[in-house]
Image (cartoon, rainbow, N blue to C red; front, top):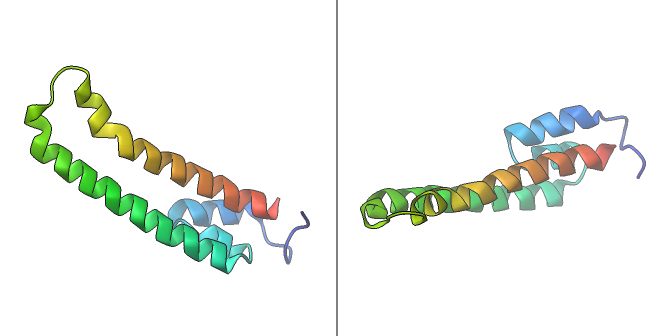
Length: 93
Protein backbone atom coordinates (compact mmCIF):
# COMPACT_ATOMS: atom_id res chain seq x y z
CA UNK A 1 0.00 0.00 0.00
CA UNK A 2 1.49 3.39 -0.91
CA UNK A 3 2.14 5.95 1.80
CA UNK A 4 -0.52 8.62 2.12
CA UNK A 5 0.59 12.22 1.63
CA UNK A 6 4.07 11.60 3.08
CA UNK A 7 2.73 11.06 6.60
CA UNK A 8 4.88 9.32 9.17
CA UNK A 9 3.66 5.87 10.32
CA UNK A 10 5.37 6.35 13.69
CA UNK A 11 3.29 9.45 14.38
CA UNK A 12 0.15 7.52 13.41
CA UNK A 13 1.10 4.78 15.87
CA UNK A 14 1.80 7.24 18.67
CA UNK A 15 -1.46 9.12 18.07
CA UNK A 16 -3.36 5.85 18.11
CA UNK A 17 -1.58 4.81 21.29
CA UNK A 18 -2.77 8.02 22.96
CA UNK A 19 -6.34 7.98 21.61
CA UNK A 20 -7.75 4.88 19.88
CA UNK A 21 -8.61 5.68 16.27
CA UNK A 22 -6.70 8.97 16.08
CA UNK A 23 -3.85 7.38 14.16
CA UNK A 24 -6.26 5.97 11.59
CA UNK A 25 -7.78 9.43 11.18
CA UNK A 26 -4.26 10.88 10.75
CA UNK A 27 -3.62 8.24 8.07
CA UNK A 28 -6.65 9.42 6.10
CA UNK A 29 -9.09 6.71 7.15
CA UNK A 30 -11.53 8.91 9.07
CA UNK A 31 -14.44 6.44 9.07
CA UNK A 32 -12.24 3.61 10.27
CA UNK A 33 -10.76 5.83 12.98
CA UNK A 34 -14.21 6.93 14.16
CA UNK A 35 -15.36 3.30 14.32
CA UNK A 36 -12.28 2.33 16.34
CA UNK A 37 -12.79 5.30 18.66
CA UNK A 38 -16.40 4.26 19.34
CA UNK A 39 -15.35 0.61 19.78
CA UNK A 40 -12.60 1.71 22.18
CA UNK A 41 -15.07 3.71 24.23
CA UNK A 42 -17.41 0.72 24.39
CA UNK A 43 -14.64 -1.73 25.34
CA UNK A 44 -13.24 0.69 27.92
CA UNK A 45 -16.66 1.30 29.43
CA UNK A 46 -17.38 -2.43 29.59
CA UNK A 47 -13.99 -3.01 31.26
CA UNK A 48 -14.78 -0.32 33.83
CA UNK A 49 -18.24 -1.78 34.51
CA UNK A 50 -16.74 -5.27 34.72
CA UNK A 51 -14.13 -4.13 37.25
CA UNK A 52 -16.80 -2.39 39.32
CA UNK A 53 -19.01 -5.46 39.35
CA UNK A 54 -16.01 -7.58 40.19
CA UNK A 55 -15.18 -5.35 43.17
CA UNK A 56 -18.74 -5.70 44.46
CA UNK A 57 -18.91 -9.49 44.07
CA UNK A 58 -15.24 -10.38 44.73
CA UNK A 59 -16.03 -11.74 48.16
CA UNK A 60 -18.03 -14.57 46.53
CA UNK A 61 -15.12 -15.75 44.37
CA UNK A 62 -12.66 -18.34 45.55
CA UNK A 63 -9.66 -20.21 44.25
CA UNK A 64 -8.92 -20.09 40.54
CA UNK A 65 -11.89 -17.88 39.67
CA UNK A 66 -10.32 -14.87 41.36
CA UNK A 67 -7.63 -13.81 38.83
CA UNK A 68 -9.69 -14.80 35.77
CA UNK A 69 -12.72 -12.71 36.58
CA UNK A 70 -10.56 -9.81 37.63
CA UNK A 71 -8.56 -9.55 34.42
CA UNK A 72 -10.55 -11.19 31.61
CA UNK A 73 -12.11 -8.10 30.00
CA UNK A 74 -9.09 -5.94 30.77
CA UNK A 75 -6.96 -8.38 28.76
CA UNK A 76 -9.32 -7.95 25.80
CA UNK A 77 -9.06 -4.16 26.16
CA UNK A 78 -5.25 -4.34 26.09
CA UNK A 79 -5.31 -6.63 23.05
CA UNK A 80 -7.68 -4.19 21.31
CA UNK A 81 -5.38 -1.25 22.15
CA UNK A 82 -2.30 -3.03 20.79
CA UNK A 83 -4.15 -4.09 17.63
CA UNK A 84 -5.48 -0.64 16.80
CA UNK A 85 -2.07 0.97 17.44
CA UNK A 86 -0.33 -1.47 15.07
CA UNK A 87 -3.16 -1.02 12.55
CA UNK A 88 -2.58 2.75 12.44
CA UNK A 89 1.13 2.19 11.93
CA UNK A 90 0.56 -0.38 9.16
CA UNK A 91 -1.83 1.92 7.28
CA UNK A 92 1.07 4.22 6.43
CA UNK A 93 3.85 1.66 6.19
